Image (tube, rainbow, N blue to C red; front, side, top):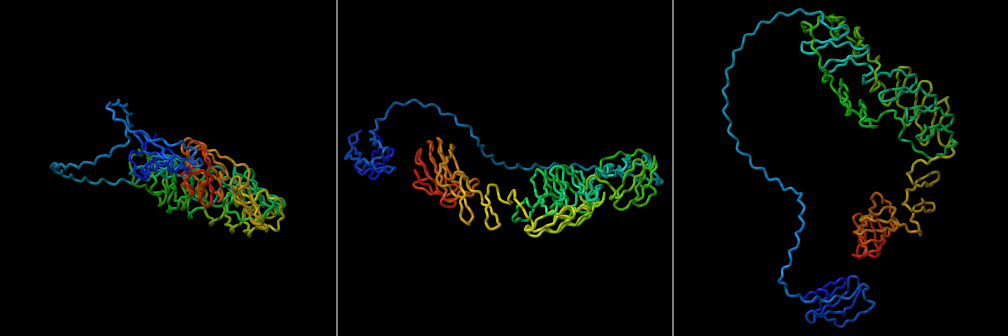
Length: 619
């Protein structure tokens, strides 16, 4: 028997399993259960004797009975008298886990009062100042500096202290080290700012980096040859194309090659905006220095004031330094007797050096911009910067913006002025590279043999054969003729869709009609639709509750589900399926849950981000 309320009021209800009972003032009357099955409004339980119930006027219509209804449970009998015996004490509950929350820190107490300052001690008396001694006589001016070997250069190692720099290898130059001893540096290891010419190289040769910090020369190509990258060692020239041949790319395995126009089919092409080899680096302002900020990444260091030098900063960005801020390593103090404030003789700008033991000589001032070069034990000399053979140059002197430099003769670098927009560089086989004029709209670049360079010509003047590929388009797209002589691309369709003709209009993708329904079996507790679920059956199996969410149009992986898409879902496990609405709107009645195990529903996309669910649903 169910526990009906002992003192109900008229209209009170009581739910027992799937049945709802209503108190009419005299008896409990069965109402419509939640599933919509009418058992009978004439089945009643009326109060009778203590511990009993009466069924009055029982009449049931068979076609209205809920198949799952087993009849009502009678009312609970009266409660027995209270027991006077105390039951045993239950077991002690498990100790709760230690709290991980730390209580707040108490407020800081007030600062105590400042202590009193002790007395100041007495100041002692000042001693008397002694008399100043007489100034000694000035020593004679020396004509030479004592010590040093032939070829050594002297420098101030301290206040009133002169030392000698050991002789350097022949051809090396003296490099300042701030306040430390200057050092001799090999010319090949210098990193200079601007070079007038690049040493070596034959006439027409193009220089390139064969390894980091090493410049090599590519011999001038044959007349009509085109420069391209081989992807391994550097640039190389193609052979010259014969009359009317076209330069065609052959992928990354081999370089481009000239081919007859009869073997190529072309339509309409636009001008390319990206080249294999760059003539210049795209950068900010004039005077900026390019450097590698990361592997395969070039950045620019902004220019600074005149007279600054570039200093390495390890793997970080190089920095500009004022020459006066450079520091040098320490040196020992000269041990020879006597010190001189000045060296006798010499003219303004001359450099003193040791021409022999204990003998100092002056080197005449060099020309502006020349550098001091060591000659071993012989006297150092000044050398013009233009005659130096340096290891690596940051810039090549001269040339206008956009000009390309090449070797006009061995050891001499010349500039080719920037060509017109759209012009192509090719070798003329005699003096070096040169630019073509810009090609007109839709013109193609055609070789004309080794007598003259290649030239632009209209596509109508070239007879082509077959094209291996069609330019443009994305992976999976279908190309079709959108007009006479015009090819367009149809975007990729949803997996499983079929291509449908629309007459003279563009074709389109459509849902296939009929066929076998594909199944996507899911066993997790959450799932979101993807493009591949279109027109499929998605089974949901788990003992715990499951949330199935139709995906929003902008979600990656489900951006192409068209309006009209149908996806059927079925609950195969005990875990009830709820249709989520966090990403898209879902309309349904009476609710958004599958009623029980093996219930199913179909979700139909009826508008953007809007679905409707129909099937065996529950609130």
